[in-house]
Length: 255
Image (cartoon, rainbow, N blue to C red; front, side, top):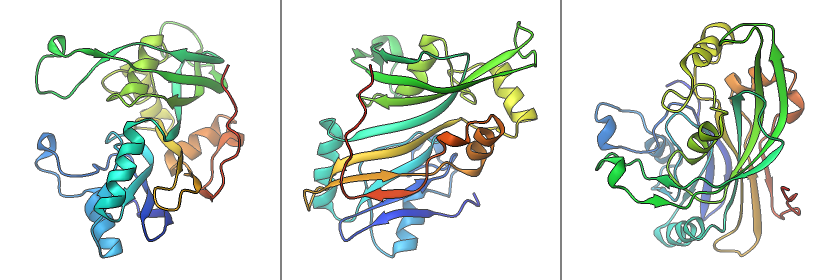
């Protein structure tokens, strides 16, 4: 894994970094042979212990927050659990997605510990909005042209693979999703558009700082793969930039 670790924000209590796609956050029993982890990279970079307070799937890129002490970790974990952290993602999907929609499909947990049929279905809510779309004169599926959209997703709950599963259930699977997506479209992007990965990125976190009580909004630029694709599709106007705001603007409501 050659992507450099990009630190977006750091103070005496917490640090925010850009997690590269394909990098595990920490050791897991499901990937025993792995030797490269975001947690260890960050520890080595800062020369101190860090504490993860939320999660990103391995193939997802984007902003991750770490506490620099157990006390701050407890407060941040509580904020995520109680849904006091606003999260924003960008995803490239197959089809022309809805302009705005609230997706409320209950989801069973996918932890691998027991059959999914035995897992209770949990409340899951994601607000989505189409930011842009494109139609390519290429037959990838059964139609002579292929259409794709850039979607904004704001998960209001924190179920595993929630955005990926919700968009897939709605009929707009994320490109590059090996489990919930469409193989022919995934292959087309990998082979012809230089995008061989899941096109889902966490680009913003908004919260109240756990120690100062001040509003904090953190933004994260896309990696080279997604940035180049958005440029190619004429979506450059939607490219986020690394930014830190100490005061939260009014968030635009999604209708």
